[in-house]
Length: 381
Image (cartoon, rainbow, N blue to C red; front, side, top):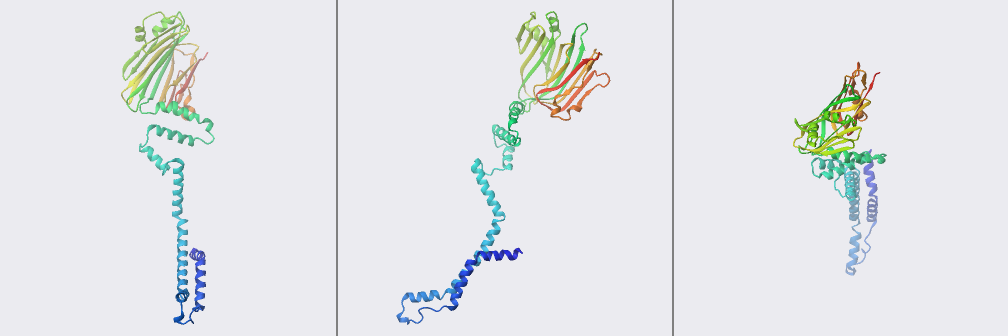
């Protein structure tokens, strides 16, 4: 059907040419030169010009007819091309020009932007700006009131952990033993924590922080301080010992209110709690550095829970806790804080089904800064 319709439509477009050619042909069939009866000697120059011109109407008709056919063919060819690939290409070209005018970027496509990023043709601030803008659009829509959460995560977590010179942790293993102190209303807390500091650049600084706290009063504080222990080992070498620090500080009496700061450490006593905080910047010279922190402190026996708090992103965490000499006490199954964004985390929390004297929790994924898990204990009688 198209083979018949398209030629007819093309001829219809050229109908003016065809009609004009037909009129000229009709005039030619009945035409007689207007000055044919004037003798040659009496003729003027324009007599011959008019007679010859009007005598060539058949040739003019042929030229007009040929022009009409050429127009019909060209019109049909133009229509075919315009509704086909050329039209699409021209539309894409006009759209590209519009995009260039609107954005100042020529030839901008998903592939070109992705290639520009993956080939490292930009700068770090440019990549960050583009990434945040893309995430804003991706999570935008009806979420504009919560989009500041994206800014918070980028500014406070990703910027601090994702640069090559930044640090994260992996393979954190913590073992806690809780014992009853004979003759005292105290619980002895023994904590052994091991992890690896990861710095992809192999050079940077790691903020090494540790905090211990024990219950004490004016009568027991000196004895408690003598038993407190915090030992930090980095790469197999001891970099800090609380008892060594205390000895270098001087054995002045600890009486409330008490506060002494010395060599990256600070000791405080308020009459009820004795606390020690250690903080220093640890220079790193390799991509992975093993760290071990051992702690000995004391809790009041009315204490009922422990919070494992992460101060930086940590991958693959394993926590164990057990009771010793506390047969009339039970541990509760740990509550894993990361369960809301790791749906499988809860299944890695275990408890001794017979005596409830030990618990274990493992999260073989990333844990974000915050409360990682909570362990509770209570008396059975």
